[in-house]
Image 1: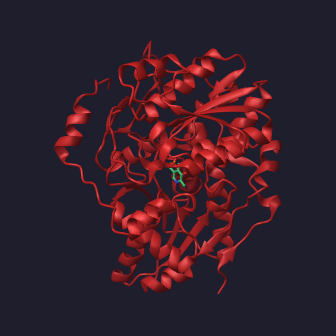
Image 2: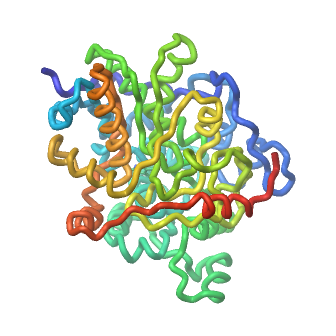
Image 3: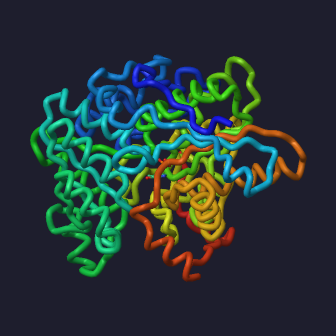
Length: 452
Ligand SMILES: *Cc1c(COP(=O)(O)O)cnc(C)c1O
């Protein structure tokens, strides 16, 4: 039985798929945080590279060319393999066929490089010399560090202080690739100084780190800010995942009944799902698309659809999305990349229109799935990716109960080799689940102002 489905370098996609152009209902407009009017690309030029700003609001072009320079860098690790998880199937004794797209083979260990390379390229092409960003657990900062080096840009990363101290290896990865990493909050920005003088022991948050990174970008000549998830252009860049997987499933002679991705801000889920969705829109394929989020941060399964800010401080445009409230403080689960209060605007509209589904996974179930996957397929998954694995296992067990042969495809968004302290804690029984009461969720959402 063939297990691995590979493509040639020449089959790296030449274009990204822009799902917005084909959605039955387009997302509501993003709003300028000051004027509350529909956002225009120009509104984003002070912060983002101009091509990125245009991609963000492009609702008409179905396909967007991948620059040859970016494709050339994709060759370092793309096309990524599609693998049939025969060992996992056997362990589950399921009639389901389980496939995974292995994005952990990128040099930084996750799918995030797919967008980091594109963003760094556009910044360089527009004559910028410096870029900034923030990072939580460190995966995005890591990806961007390598991408910045590849295209000759200087990168400053604000890393949430608690992660800076608890995840020293991600910090060293960024420094090895040449980025300047600062623990946030820091004394280097007004936003950071304000917080530190009020609360000198504050351990930081993504919201604060975003504010610092934006402030530095605005005050530095030839410098722009970049973001690693949530926004439309990031999802667009990630569609290389699904476009390759589509060809590979064809080689395998199958078509997925179910497509699954773990869900933080939505970029890897979008990447695996959107290219298949175009056949659901047009060809009437009855595929199910499942976003797997952590039970401790359940914006898709238990949040509300409304306008909210993308960051804690309220600096970003207002986004129409499923949210738990921009001031929601998720529990410190190990899947740091999934600890985000909201979802991208495209995915939110698709969920509202019931074109995709969401499921929530408890922390212990995710690690149990991760360990089973490691023992059957050999790869130690990122704690984030383990949520997708857990959802795939649930569906495979359902297929077994029903005695039906289903084809399941999930995205392995990254490996967990820099997250072994999390596995250590799981194996020694030191991890727990976190449940949220309806009152806690309602309380947080109730504090939001209503715009629609
Ligand atoms: C960042 C990250 C995620 C979550 O981000 P999305 O934008 O929701 O994909 C998932 N898996 C890994 C390995 C990550 O690094």
